[in-house]
Image 1 (cartoon, rainbow, N blue to C red):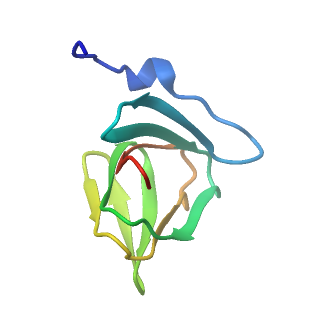
Image 2 (spheres, one colour):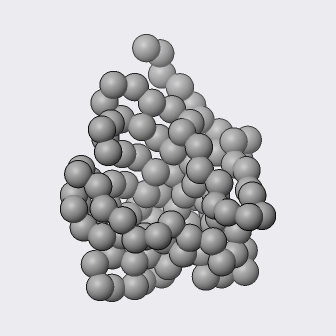
Length: 106
């Protein structure tokens, strides 16, 4: 497989009704998804069997992890260990764009 460069600015899309999520790359080991949220949209709290990594590309969000809530913003990478409850809400007035990396099978 050849190296690829994924242009998030070209790939991002938004939906007025719900968060937009699309797999933008995958192979046998991992999957990269693009998550785009308008204000008020969210990813409900959930868990994975493997670690989960989110990189904030645009905007500000609220990370819910375990029993804590904290602000996350552009340039931050969120690493959630396996089996830890986590979710994100766009509580701002601007759009939120996140790149999500997960191991296959999750």
